[in-house]
Length: 105
Image (cartoon, rainbow, N blue to C red; front, side, top):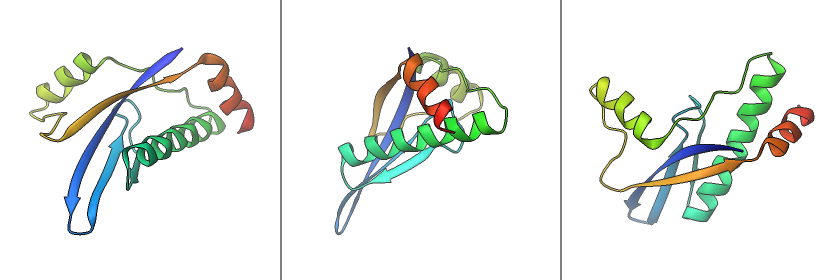
């Protein structure tokens, strides 16, 4: 089973709250939603789409890293991984599910 770190940012706007998520191990894998649950579902869908695209182009899936490894990487580049309103989630992707995603490509 592979576990990917998901960073979720929440933003209050006049019409409510919005969420945006990204997967640090998978550049370009982002999602948004009006609720935390919707955002998590959208990021799962986006991650599956990236897996399919990488596989169909003959590229390997990126290996997941720990939250601490991401923090070190970001701080070494003078950036902060987490904002004041960040939520950290972990998404498990079992190996059989990864194979299922890849077969569907």
